[in-house]
Length: 199
Image (cartoon, rainbow, N blue to C red; front, side):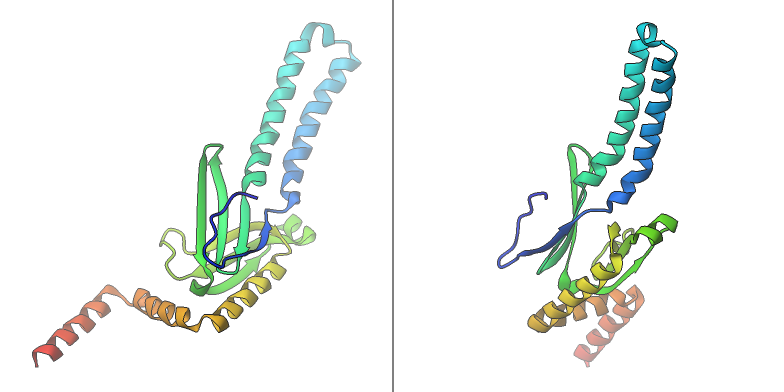
């Protein structure tokens, strides 16, 4: 699990990554792509002449599998008693961290993404929250096992946080109402306040 700077009285409740079934397709492709040429390579006695070609071929497909495996192993979803955090890497040197406080969550839903996803019970959990950028309207926990359980668990700790921190929810409710207003509505309300002050 990646190192996370926890806040005061913050504890990690759950940490997980995407389902291992995501690696099934690249694993099968890599095994087949390596095994079939090597079968003919050794079966027809070609190894003395083309050993370098065989080594390069194997390395290419191992690199292909590693390209799928590395993002999977480095991407973590972390749930604490205060936040939901996603840690992922665009490359080995560029780490990104996305998070949202529990008190900003508006809705949690999940969906399966295809036949394998439905059959093996993994999918995406979508978290809609106040303050997310327009280009990222929700926080997604992608291809996680038992998404319906994670969805219910997130909503459970959200409700628990709401019950134990009512003052935080009052602030977020005001923020969400302002964010939902159109610019013209905000301008009209400000103009009305100015008119009342002048009167």
